[in-house]
Image 1: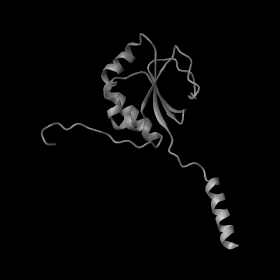
Image 2 (image 1 turned 120 degrees about the horizontal axis):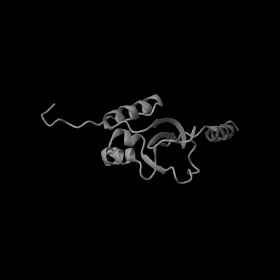
Image 3 (image 1 turned 180 degrees about the vertical axis):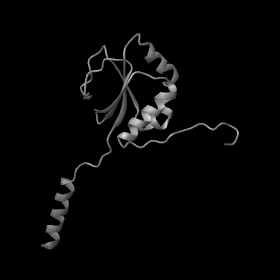
Image 4 (image 1 turned 60 degrees about the vertical axis):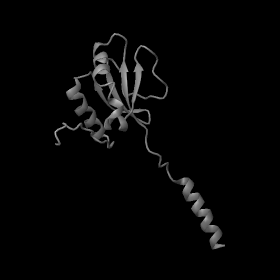
Length: 132
């Protein structure tokens, strides 16, 4: 009897545990046609983003603000400026960056919002080629 009760308890406890599945983290880029700063981001960052530690930690998802907002996204407030980068965890906004401050500042700001939300990422740097 003890053995039977142990099995029942173990099975019940297993199903009562919260899901341990990792959260889905994405970086939403809200853009619109004709946005000069969006085009600048697309030229400077777009081709390499997915190859970076930040891109691996928070893959890019795009949203045109002239279209209806997807149902699987919950924003803290409306998006009024483009580009706006919204860090989403399981589809819910946890942080945002409004505007594109240029390549040099973008990486630091994205790294900062990832760190503030306890999302680990590897900083990938290129070798200078001189052995350093």
